[in-house]
Image (cartoon, rainbow, N blue to C red; front, side):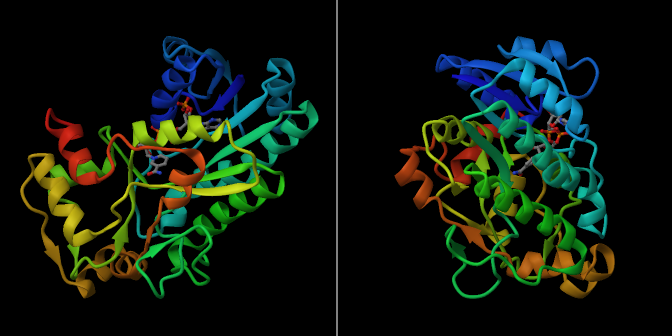
Length: 307
Ligand SMILES: NC(=O)c1ccc[n+]([C@@H]2O[C@H](COP(=O)([O-])OP(=O)(O)OC[C@H]3O[C@@H](n4cnc5c(N)ncnc54)[C@H](OP(=O)(O)O)[C@@H]3O)[C@@H](O)[C@H]2O)c1
């Protein structure tokens, strides 16, 4: 198939492009930062410069390259700084998930694109009541903490707009498998355990996220899939394991009142209450098998040589 990957030069794009070309797909890969064309070409795709926030340029790019499928993987997190407001940190990404998604969907309609797949997110999304592991049919959080309301609304918009258009939203777990802001902070002991660390996080290795995405090409939408590993886990389990895999000292423990003063109450709430997500639907319907079914092996394999 002729596949356009929007955001091909990012963390997931770099894993996805070789898997797509390896399966015989012809790939158009978009990038935005100057100088990224060569990276996209080296990954086996035809590079196209594109700003998703320019709807006319989006329409032009899609009409000119005539993809059969669009995979929207654009985010703006590479230079993100964590702050007390997740909404402030995520503001540029939220625009890509709302305005960017709408522009791409409009272009896809105009060009008669057959299939649309988009990056969504599973952690911190589901209702913070009842079981600790949620399926796609469980309700989303109706009252997210104030510091992440716009971010949550942007992800909800993406899920809704994509599925209403007959597409597929992939709610990925927290990516790992490459150095990122979290691994850097953990190495410096700047990522503490908050309270008893009971909030649950679903993770996914970047290679497994990419393999699920490739399988979604053969699937009919509308659909939503949690693309997470088999073992959503509380912070009190995964954080010490990740620190050990990184060769870092064990994380500091911070009482909730102090974490609230430093990072804001919203972060404390999520550290204590967030839910995990189940991958049963993705495994069953996509026929997906994971190379790293648990972050336990995945962290060790990814970071033992330094990450
Ligand atoms: N599920 C998750 O946990 C999750 C999801 C996403 C990202 N992350 C993490 O966030 C960090 C940064 O992500 P990343 O490396 O993928 O970089 P990123 O800066 O988030 O960029 C992702 C892709 O979107 C493109 N892009 C950015 N702004 C755009 C715009 N206005 N129009 C069109 N395309 C645009 C980028 O192009 P350029 O490369 O040309 O700038 C890149 O191809 C990584 O550590 C990653 O693992 C985690």
